Length: 130
Image 1 (cartoon, rainbow, N blue to C red):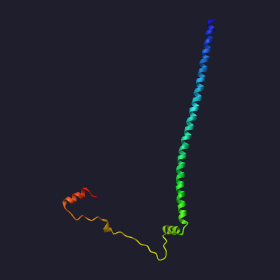
Image 2 (tube, rainbow, N blue to C red):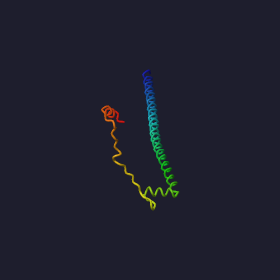
Image 3 (cartoon, rainbow, N blue to C red):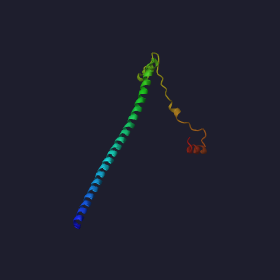
């Protein structure tokens, strides 16, 4: 009779162990699923944050472009602004106006030698060219 009870007790232990093992496996699957979901949510969050930063930069550049266009429209609303734009873009001049070209003399761009040409002056200017 003792053997029969031992077998029954051993079966109970095996069933209990199998139940515990099944519970641990279920908890492991639930944990892995939860971690995987959290990881995917983090990835979506980081990609949306990066997309938001790019959208903010685009918005700032578009606002700058809008202010430039508004300034151009405001300048073209007056006759002086239209005249200025015509002169800049197309090189138009009024009748009787001429063009002045300023040419620099090539000799005036080279520095003149100092009047004193002793040896100490040359050494000083060679060491300290300013």
